[in-house]
Amino acid sequence: MEALPRETIVDVLEGRLREDILAGRHPAGSYLPPERRLADGYGVTRTTLKHAFGRLVQAGLLETRHGVGTRVRDFTRLGGADLLPMLVRHSPDWFGEIFEVRRGVGALIAERAAARATGGQQDELRELLDAVRTAEGGDAAQLADIEVHRALARATGNRVYVLLTNTLFNAYLPVRAALVRPFTDPAAAHARLEPVVAAVLAGDGGAARRAAEAYLTATERIMLEGLA
Amino acid sequence: MEALPRETIVDVLEGRLREDILAGRHPAGSYLPPERRLADGYGVTRTTLKHAFGRLVQAGLLETRHGVGTRVRDFTRLGGADLLPMLVRHSPDWFGEIFEVRRGVGALIAERAAARATGGQQDELRELLDAVRTAEGGDAAQLADIEVHRALARATGNRVYVLLTNTLFNAYLPVRAALVRPFTDPAAAHARLEPVVAAVLAGDGGAARRAAEAYLTATERIMLEGLA
DNA sequence: ACTGGTTGAGTGGATGAGCCACTGGGCCAC
DNA sequence: GTGGCCCAGTGGCTCATCCACTCAACCAGT
Image (cartoon, rainbow over all chains, first blue to last red; front, side):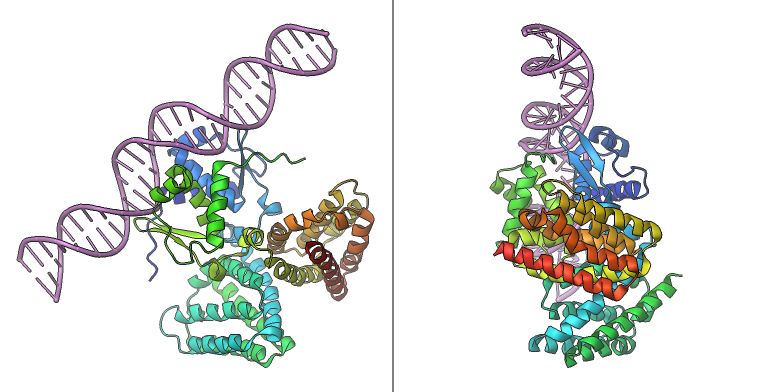
């Protein structure tokens, strides 16, 4: 099991700052208070605050200018998809939109994979699909399911699809993990996924696209029901 | 003009570390030397090194464990699309793959936008397209062109498409900016873009998808030629 | 009045010494 | 053997201090 360590001070601080920004307490375009004052306000050293700032700058939420100050970026306009995990954590409204995109992109990936998968990649897909069926206990089936999707992305021969899949996974996987119930049955997971892989292996792009759309629509419905 | 300040020490250090990682001098899964030793090696303070580490951790390239060490993550397997800018800077191989995805996603966006754009969004599209035609000097036409694409993404009513568009822009825009020649002519830019907007305004999803594909294929060809 | 250089307050950037907290392996008593 | 303890090595965090940059106000000199 993944033994994640206790949250560090920087973690907590980053979370508070992010919350304050996403909640609009520091509006986009406005300057934050000076580091010394802010650090004092949060009861931490300026160095520690700077570490938290560094992360948020990297994430695209903040923008610092030497000698001037630190400003909140207009991330809804300029931000990248890597913001999704924190956005969805702050407000679950994003979930539906994420899944619509996942459906569109997933269909693209299936279609491309059907057209391009190499022999080795086809073998890998067969193996990983089989691993879903024989998965045992807890979230093993769910993890195996994810691996199939990663392999489908790889089978497009386009590494950007792999990264994109990871980005979308990072955004909605925590939510999906919370809904363990519908995803822990290996037989059901295998049955849902099998038509997609079969179409890809058959090299039928149209069928693969439709199968992927069906799969993603089905899992989306399960998740949206689970959230309600 | 955007007067970007001189690179800070942390910037440089981050670049060197990233380069060392992407070049495989620190293989995925391996542990980096201890912070004290590494900081000494790069001739900087441990604090400074930690700031650079913080960014790379946030970016998904590194993973630190208190009391154990700092490890290089297998970003080709687990990384998100936000890595693209640094990956493409390190090796331009990525460019073709990025553009293929941009084409697929752009077509999806155009189709959705045609089906869903509200009246206000249609007006905005008309205005922004017009701004491309009347753009003057330097890269003004190129910037106006980008704004049209952002507006198309917004017109889908799905904010994730906006973020995704930004992510892909961040990845290939620096390259595109280097090829100013084909993109500085307002009339040409307007002519390329007009059919896409027209189809979206007409509410014809299929036509919008095909127009977007044609546009993206054309600009892709221009860029690939420029690179060669 | 206008121009142009100077200054100073306020901001973020970087340092280095020092201490705390965590991990893991090896040692020792049982 | 087995269990517990210890300690060396690692990253986390703080503090005090200085450097570098920006901007606006000021003040000559014209």
